[in-house]
Amino acid sequence: MFVLPPPPPRYPNGMSPWGTGIPGGPIPIIETNNTIGHPKGPEYQFSVGEGTYVLREDIHLATPPPHPSEAPITNINPLSTAPHPISAGTKLSLVQIKYRDTPTHLYRSPTLSSSKVINGIDDSRVSLMGGETDDGSSLGIAASSSQASKSGDIPQKFGGGNASLAPLPTAGKPMKKPKNNIAKSNSSFVSRIITHEHLTKRLTERNSEDLLVFANVNRAFNWLDMGASNKQEPLSKILFTKAHPICHDVNMVTRSANHIDVIIGFSTGDIIWFDPISNKYARINKNGAINSHAVTEIKWLPGSENLFLAGHNDGSLVVYDKEKEDAPFMPEETSNGPAYSNGAAPASFMGFFNIKKTVKSSNQKFNPLSYWTVAKGPITAFQFSPDLEHIAVVSEDQSLRVINFMKEKLLDVYSSYYGGFTCVCWSPDGRYIVTGGQDDLVSIWSFAERRIVARCEGHHSWVSSVAFDPWRCDDRTYRFGSVGNDCRLLLWDFSVGMLHKPKAAAVQHRGSMSSAAAAYPAVTPGRSRGESQSMRLRSNSNVASVQTEDSTQSAVHPVEERARTAVLPPIMSKEIDPDPLTQLIFREDSIITTCVNGRPPSL
Image 1 (cartoon, one colour):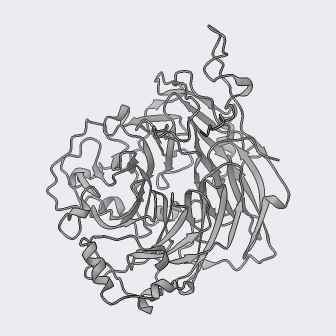
Image 2 (cartoon, rainbow, N blue to C red):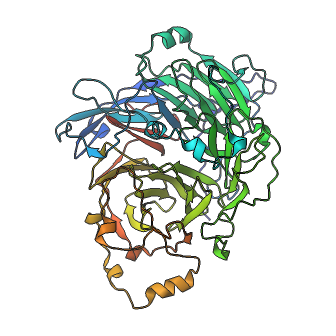
Image 3 (cartoon, rainbow, N blue to C red):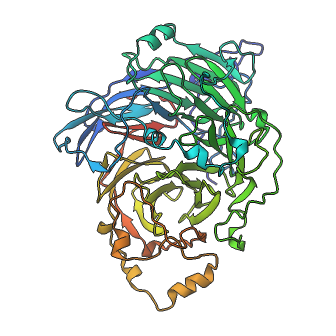
């Protein structure tokens, strides 16, 4: 009989977070501060083709103790099948009031040479590995701002001109803001807010090009100014009671020097619309009025001032309006055509995509505006395509779904090799989708050819985040990275021309394609399944727009055997943190990573 040793204590001196251990004793409130370190040494750097990345700063965002009202969590048995509390580690959003956009055309920066040293930071562990340009200015922002700058007509397209969604005239009227003051709130949802003692002065003195960071970790939500000398000190920090913030997003359209719209999704299903400058907030989906399951991913609709999309733990995607009231949700009988783009819902599609309320509904007085049941398991991530018409959704039911967001149509369903998908991203030109999952693999899918292109082997545990580096992509090669629970950062250079089919793929028996079609009758011809050289080379356009007559036909794709799929090795693999990593962000001069919790820095 094997007995697992107990895990190390989570709190010092054997003290529990709910008391001193003495009956009737006071309940301690343990508060720690954010810290910053500057570790040095060869173990804190790595080299790739463009130069050497050096760890510049290690920022630890303090993890708050559990709220006294929270039920005690006993030591978790790793072999237990009981559901664990929803958590997401540390998640970041970056914003600059005035910014330089991501490149509109893919290119490889000619200013970086193999001998150039690039500085960086590792944070919250937030970890940022980055550098400076020749003029000494720090450049680069979150890639989502590129979409926001060219998507002004997206809100009008979404809904197909539904008059019920038409915004009220706002000419001459100030922008709407949330009404409730979070500092004076008596709501049991918010524990307290800690603001910097010189907040007003710091907001007045800050530069519009300074990088602001929003970060959720455990039950805390931090707002940091990365342009300050004491950047580890938050401008404000909100502590919530029982609900833990899981995800958040910043509206790149409405941001200004005196207003920032942030939406935060919680483990209870609640959503908060928050303006950190005025400290005002509004609560949406209060107490799970529309969906009571945790919000696992949340994003503003590109170009929209009011609408955002939330993915819930029950596999639902819901579109909300931050300015509308909630109402108990009852599924509607949709009469706007099928959810499947080939006009039918074959047996193999059952449960994959179901519209409970369409955006074309005339009943748009209250939230939600649209409600889709997308997956059979929790949604883990989704991302809008660069053409802003499609969305890639991954979930724990082992499926990647590509949906035409504007038409509310399911296009493709792909399966993982093993286990659920955990993260997803699009290439800057929209040609490829990259996913990571519980099978320790990073997979590359061709949106145009509707097939898997390669599997990337190198991680030793679940992959938690994938992202493209638009500043390291050119007309031939893509650069993307991944992080995972193995505490490692991996960088990959990918080009279709450099991939070689495995030997097993070269042996193809006559009639094998028809056999596959018989086994999967739902598979129909897609945008293209061809292997011609013309399809394998990318066009010169910035964003892919590959369409054929049957390009909107739905397809459920079988799992491709590993022996028949090209394998791509990483160009760099390094363990950069003692804790499992949760997020990866590329900037022009840096790489940012975050980890599960805020351990003190190892110096």
